[in-house]
Image (cartoon, rainbow, N blue to C red):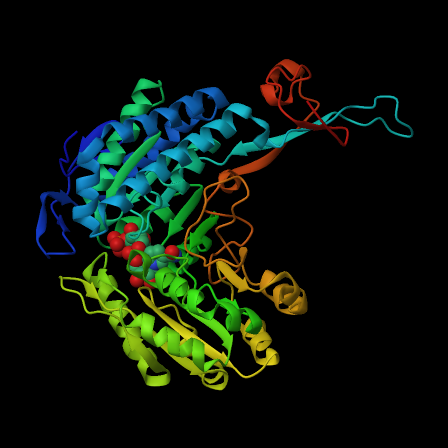
Length: 520
Ligand code: NAP
């Protein structure tokens, strides 16, 4: 398959626009062809109208049919072979192993959702049968299940060109729910996006999905993204990226005549607490593991551990000093992210001490790792130290007591994750810390660093604001499907007209709650 620099408006290739967008190799600064063209507002409008027309057909597809579609998308992505991997590496400066791993994760995610659809019980079917003889009044027949919302707009992040992009978690969960997707491609990986967009459309054609079930539009300004959120036919938004971007889309959606839900995942500093005895016993290995987690992927993970909280321990900080000097950075995803990283590091230097800088690296978007430290009071007094610095840096906060550690947890805002290192006895001693943390994050991790997010049924990749704009959901794992559905109750509907999931026969053999009891 070839990268042609086209917007994909359903099954139609389109380049009406005149404003060029160029992919850039972040390692060399060299442009990568071909030239793309910013989508026009009329191309976007056509994509959304096609999505709306497709919804009338796609919403009625069975779980098995949608599963076949998602499985075909995975097969088409795999069939892209080395071309996809080479383009990914050129556009992201991430290594080939990471590209291959992320492709596996993306295809695994598609197949996991397909298995969810085939099993079918995710629709949460509830049947309360009628009681015509009930006194003093008869009771009607009520049956409820999750139904798709309608066309969904999705924005991908720069830092996962596959798993959080065109065929990433939000697209997959929306398609699984029965919602067509209009995707705003990220300008950092234009060619990768087009290849994946074409794979989705090829799969749609092979599995007889309607034209408009998926569209891909490009832009490197906010115009198309804002128009997508404001389009009256769009019924929900999925987003991963910056706080500024996510909050702006959330505000735009709330200001619409018909407000719509925005699921924005906007980053987090993922605090890590190492309890004192564990720090004393395992400090050396934890210092190395922490540095690895901080520098993984040049620190460009939403789960990067930006804050480490300990009770003051000079041996541990000494060990960090020696391991951080050997830490390796690399090229960041684009010039903008590198510049924001440098500004963040400069800002931290005003308030915190540098434990050590890591190795300098060469390249157009090179970033040098750095570890800072500050005592509790300094941290508490300077809000700048509570901001995310997206990249290979982290801050160690040295508390002088358990009370100060608790205070960090009590005063922190919402994050995606928090980690606690401790033996079972020590964790029991710090039950109050754990209780506080549970109220601030989507995932609480024990004896592990936060980088690495499994795609499973139980995963929660979300958290209270400002980590996300809706803490009741996740952007990774199968629970994400209900982002794009709403419950609908059918009262006294004739059995033959009900969706198969709610008919008396339960021909799909799914789990349902019938008169309060879970049964097949
Ligand atoms: P971003 O700047 O928020 O962009 C993500 C996507 O949203 C892009 O397609 C962008 O379009 C669009 N967008 C951003 N602001 C918008 C607005 N106001 N209106 C309409 N569309 C908008 O994120 P990024 O490029 O991935 O990375 C930039 C920064 O985001 C990083 O430095 C980091 O701080 C943070 N980040 C966080 C996460 C996370 O895990 N939550 C992941 C990656 C990055 P255009 O590019 O065309 O403007």
